[in-house]
Amino acid sequence: MSKTLKVGVIGVGGIAHTHFPGWQESPHTEIVALSDVSAEALKSAGEKTGATKLFEKGEDLIACNEIDVVDICTPNMYHTPLTVAALEAGKHVICEKPLAPQPDDIRKMIAARDKSGKMLMTAQHFRFEGSSKALKAEVDKGVLGNVYHARCWMLRRSGAPTRPGFIQKKHSGGGPCIDIGVHILDLTLWMMGQPKPVTVTGVTQDKLRRLPGAFSNWGGPIPADWDVEEFASAFVRFENGATLVLEVSWLLNHPKTHGEDMQMWLYGDKGGAHWPQNVILTTDNATCQHFDTQLQNAESGEPHAKECMAFAEAIIKGEPSPVPAEQSLDVIAILDALYKSAQAGREVCLK
Ligand SMILES: NC(=O)c1ccc[n+]([C@@H]2O[C@H](COP(=O)([O-])OP(=O)(O)OC[C@H]3O[C@@H](n4cnc5c(N)ncnc54)[C@H](O)[C@@H]3O)[C@@H](O)[C@H]2O)c1
Image 1 (cartoon, rainbow, N blue to C red):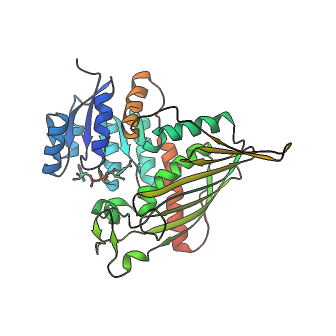
Image 2: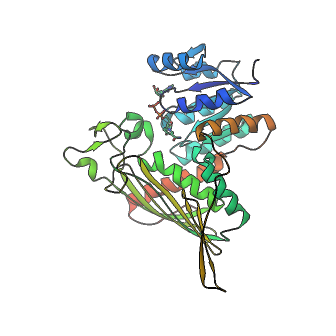
Image 3: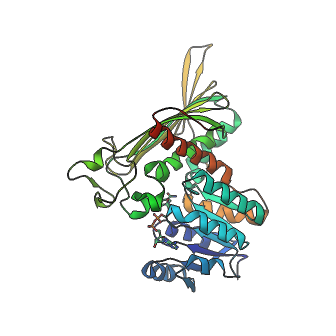
């Protein structure tokens, strides 16, 4: 039986393949079209999904009347023009993170969304992990009280994606800040209840990639055309008085040779919490006792697939976007201010 929403995916390289199962599993969606500038990627994704409308140009997919939803999985710098064009053509859009590397580009996407009346969602799959949902439910119940500080990091040892779409600014818009910083920062702001950032002090570093023989476990020798940061740290103040410390890196002499170290600590006046271990830390002053309570994950399931299914469900039910663009704008405004602060050598105000 034909499903209600017809999906077209633009950019069918790596991450698009994690979206396909979500579109296939959802009772509301089916993949009918694909686009990629690489004929090889297009052919392989066509065989995998069974989609028959294959376009080398994203614009041609967007012009296809049959399509209701456009899923954008290209390198970062192409997100804005494709999203704006798709919204103007009357499609709902889910776009990979970062929504765009520049705040002004996200503002253009929001304006196009508002004009079209269609849905726009950022694919922040970590929000759809069972561990994230379980902790968010506790935080929203008030278990931590007022969260006044957070520490978060996403650190890799020799873990740089060495493809041009990540290490060349003209394609990516930035380095680990823009690639993985958006993941942990989005998750942390979401947990904190989206406080409004007011100032950022940031530093970027570029050390290990310049050493002789520098390599990445995710792509071999470090290419000479790398022009983005390899490490960044930041201190953020929020309008409500809360603060946040962020650290991100693709190349760092830090434990976890394989994979990455991704953590978040939340500190509130009723309790603290650690993710992804999902432990809640509380203190009973009456008995001078400390309690470390392990949360159980209520949900299982692959988070990329779940984010696509949540998007389709929200369209069908007429609910708000599961990850609104305004929240991604705050994430990118912080990272943009981090870069500006690093360059100026001082704190930067966001207002
Ligand atoms: N959510 C996550 O965990 C996660 C992980 C990896 C990547 N991403 C994001 O997904 C996006 C793509 O990353 P990737 O790892 O899949 O990269 P990739 O290089 O593996 O794939 C990108 C594909 O886009 C194609 N492409 C480039 N420009 C295009 C254009 N103008 N029109 C159509 N196709 C085009 C390329 O040929 C390639 O096949 C990036 O924005 C990245 O930040 C998200």
